[in-house]
Image (tube, rainbow, N blue to C red; front, side, top):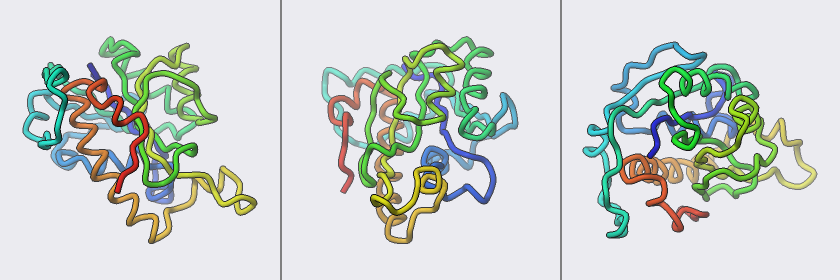
Length: 211
């Protein structure tokens, strides 16, 4: 059961549409995001929603019969770290410590170089893939055993730009059209994972191509 969702990215208008801000962009597309009471706490923007309220936002997406149990209970904590990506684990750790949330009940939504644009994936634990936000998570919690929702941004064309410049650049107009579809589909999947548990998205979302 997921109790805390952290949407990784960098604060500030200059970074708002960057590839590196894929996680924060997903937070903005949540159908209930604008109605939440966001507060500057825990080194980030923090809000919560009663789990029961999410039931109204579920889509009619098919869930296997053996996974249809509703696991959600209590509050879901939502966080946009404002520590910048390299220290985002500091903010997540502050929330998890205050509410005594186990690491295995945390979901981190982040951009993923190793997945092409137009794909997304759920996974539990695993390597860090050179992602500084994930490195910060592991440094704070001394473990990488948390859930990840990976939004593909792809690697730059070979010999074109370096990785740092690539992730801090904006999506092109054509890429924005593709990523808008990704956000729409992933928002529905995120809500399903919160209501029925992240395992309900597997194996379909081990690596999913989004039309």
